[in-house]
Length: 435
Image 1: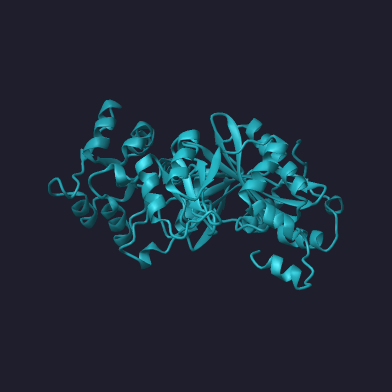
Image 2: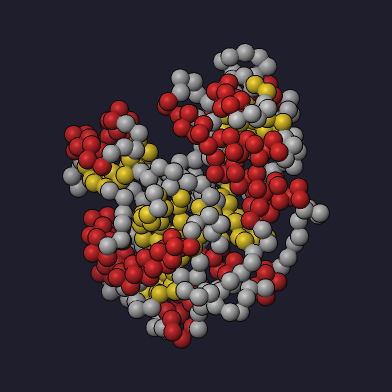
């Protein structure tokens, strides 16, 4: 992608999507103007090359913000900024900011559901086989977020909007081959985050779950075939595919394994099953996180997540798990009448959380990072989870998914059924889905 322009200038024929389209999608200004022309919402944004400019943009669009350098790819250097002090720190730490190399500032959509769509286009017609729903909420890099195919929590009207927007964007960009478009759903509105006119890392997953050889079809389109010749249609299927990221944290014991906008995964796995819960359980197991079916769960969440913690704690309690909670989280559980035992932090008293982990008294950990709001660093909890091979979740959404996975396995008469990919494909209904 990065050398396409130089190749073209050297006389190399670029098949498929044009170099100008690649540049347009990468250029935030040009892409935003295109979205305005199509009347497709995007989060408010701006570009700054000085601290003063950054503060002015922040005041205009409001906190929280997603900030990143304009001159790096793949999510490196991205950060969620919650106030002016954090913004000043980011600008101070960013290296090489100039008017030609500004920082990008976007409105961060809090508590938004992220989704994405991989599509095939021949420049005129576009085919979107399915929408993928991210399990982690907006703010986690798409490569690090688990996702489910088909979606389980996105309303039909928003799915139709995503199909419609993807088709319009692909046509306007004149994409010839594959395109991946990322979305966030917030306050009942679908926002486009970015479009990548290329094969994404999720193409193999969509291909396997939907039984559509997307790379093969995209190659045919790139050499001149038309989508109408392919006889493609969206079809109903009763199984679920869950993608989970694989992380290298066990190789780096001193690294805090918290997730954020910067990509940290080194691979991914796919779990397939007839229910979402079982598919999630399989994916976690394949990613080397074996979810327990009994024991105790440690729950400690940041102030921002305390309003959401009771429902997941209640689920674990109803499944027979003993609940350990830190003092602040415990107060929330107490108000919700959920029995728990206090787990002391290492600066409070002993036996503390690390003692409980070392003694094998905790089988799963839910810990959303307190970050800079907290006087004390809580990364030791996550580091010890990795050290002692205890499955852990750093988001409430992932904790809910884990609870569904455990519940599905507890209800199952066997560990889980193994079916071949071909059998799943045979069970896909022949009748296309009405659009």
